[in-house]
Length: 169
Length: 325
Image (cartoon, rainbow over all chains, first blue to last red; front, side, top):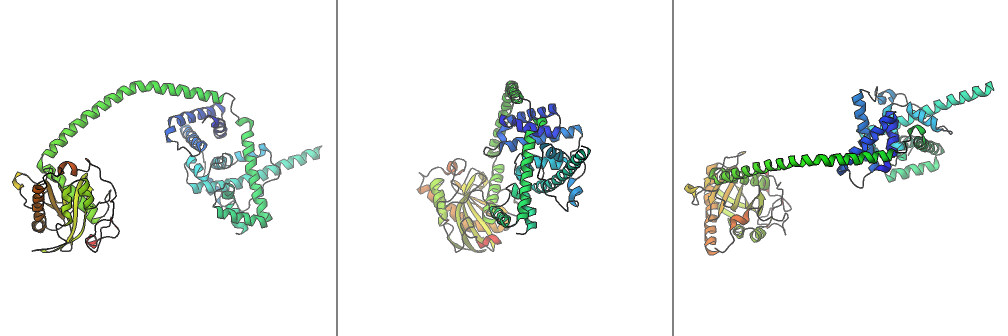
C-alpha cells in the first residue's frame, strides 16, 4: 500500500487544497486500509480500493466542515449548454491544463481525476464516489467537454496577451 | 457507425470501457474518417496532458518523508490496537462464560421440553407439516430427496418397507388412494420416509420417521390414529405409532377423513413394521440413526428417484400433477 502513498497524496492535495490536511487524509486512509485489510479482495485494483477510502474520508471531512461539494447540480447547469465542443488546442502547458481543470465543478474534477488521471474503470470510480455508474459516464462526458472549452478560452486569453505584448514591444 | 456515434462513444472508447466488437467498429471508422481521428487524437492528447500535468505539478508533490511518517503511524496504530486487545480479551472471556451459561440453561430447558410429550408431539407435527408443504406441495426442500433404498442403507432399514407399502393403488371406504411418489427426505433435522398420495383430489403425505416418544402418549400407545399438534395453514397431522416409528398422514382433509384414511393406510403399515421388528430384531436402532444430525445424508440421490407411477416427483425431472391442486 505504501507505494501508493504519493499518488494518494496528490489526489488528496487536489481535493482538500491544504498540505497539512492532505497529509492527514493520507495517514487516515492508510490506517483505515490497515484496519479493514480483510475486506480487500485480492486480485482487485488495490489503488482503486485505497482511493475509495480516501474519497470517503474527504467527503466526511467536507460534511463536518459544512462545505458542500456541489453548489448546484452541474448536470442541470450544463445540460443545455454543450452544443459545440471545440477541438483540443495543439499547444498545452501543464499550468493551462490544471488551471482549466480547477475551473470545473468539483463533481466533474473528481470524476476526471479518477478516470483520466488515476485510470480507474467506470465501476471503480462509481464505487469510490458512491454514485451510479451512469452518473460517472455523464459527468465524465460533460466534464471533458467543459475542460476543452476552458482550454480554448485560456488559449484565446494567452494568445491575446501575447499579441498585446508584441504590439507594445 | 456514423461520426455522431463515434463522438458519443469517444469517452468510453478512450477509457477502454467498450466491448471488443464496438472498439473494432470505431477503429474501422477511424481508418476512413480524418475528422473523427483528429477528435479522438485530441481527446487522447488531453488525457495524457492532464495525467502528466497532475503528476508533475510541484504544489501536489508529497514531502519526501511522507512514506516514512505513514509507516510510523502504522506501527503506532498497530501497537496501540494490540495493547487494547489485552483488556478486551478479558471481556471476551466474561462474555464467553455468560454465553456458555445461557446455552446450558437453554439446553436443559429444551431437554425438558422434549421430555414433555405434548411439546414433542407439537414439534413432530410441525416438522411433518413443513415437510409436506416444502416437499410435496412446493418442491423447495433445501436438500433433494434420496431413494428409499439409499435411505434404508444409510439411516434405517425400515424405510425399505415403504417401497411396497402402501400399495400403488388402495381402495378405502372413502375412495381410492393412488401413490404418486416414494422417497426419503429431511426437514427440520428429521428424516422421513415419504409416500405422496392422491386421495379425493387432494395431496396426502404419508411420513414415516423414528419415534422419539412424540407420536403417542401412554393413552394412545397402540396403533390408533390420533391427531397430533395443532392444525397449521389448514393442514392436520394424524399419527399412528409403530414399534419404533411414527407413521403420520398430513393433508388439508378434514381430520375425521384423515383418521379414516390412516386406518386404511397407516395401520397396515404399522402392523408390517411390527412384524419386521420381530423378525429383524438385529436391525440398528432407528431412533438414533434416523436423525439427520446423527448421520448426514448426502445431498443428491445416487440415481433417479424410483418411479412408481407415470408421473415423477419434481426433484427428479418432471412434476406430479397432484401438486397443482
